Length: 280
Image (tube, rainbow, N blue to C red):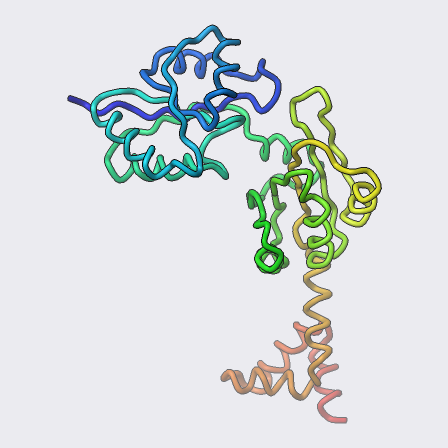
């Protein structure tokens, strides 16, 4: 018997009108719907007049339930996977089920739809050509700071998800690590109280310190600018004398002439300036 298929069904992140025709047809046709919260998904299915068997699949039962779902897929059943909102398998235990399907040779069919991070990005006013999705930062203070330090030199626009009760801590840590970067705070996407607050980290921190945040947030943060990178590089070389700078390159195998040229490029000066400094 041929294996069934796992359908990754993107559901609305707020406005129920965002469900796609294809998603509705798939939900009607599958043998089983695996949902992050069956009660929540039941409300959506009732709205769509769909009555299908459901089972729960979430973070704390993903291992044992994943094995059960794989066996049902291998027996020929088609299964739809849905999260509470948006596209499953993004910051979601669905990625484990997809990995199991890949391991067992079960076909996975993505059914496109809403993704909070992409909607926030395209409305942010920040560069969209290159970006990185970071999801939720860890709640552990040390771990969160380590993650942000890793991203300090990231040139691409960064996308984060955050809960309202953790927003102040996240903004505080971002300010400490990134400096005062531009940020777009996107709240309650596609819902009645949808809001885009395009500002900088300092202003955002001031606003939400005075007005407790409400609703789920997507944070779209500016990557490090070329000017910021150049300033940091110049500051790095200022801690080193010109002679030490040139010697560093000579020790790496460059000729003195090549080393002087490299040091001049680093410092944004001419090779003549480097030569003059060495002769002092």
